[in-house]
Length: 77
Image (cartoon, rainbow, N blue to C red; front, side):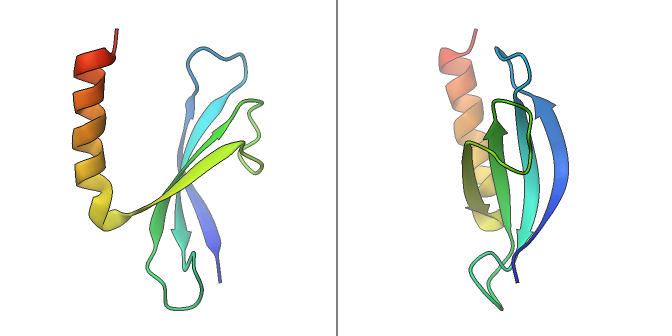
């Protein structure tokens, strides 16, 4: 059973009402599947109906964070 629990919501820079929501999704692919982190973006601030989302296995989060930090250092303002 897929169940989402919002962990944190951030304001989406460059938008009036947009948000980035980070959630835990339990059993995202059916009974017995491992939990994943979900990053969702809603341009109008509606966490329940995001325009984009991605599921990230918890085993991949450290590598993802490293890559995001590298991108920020190289391309961020």
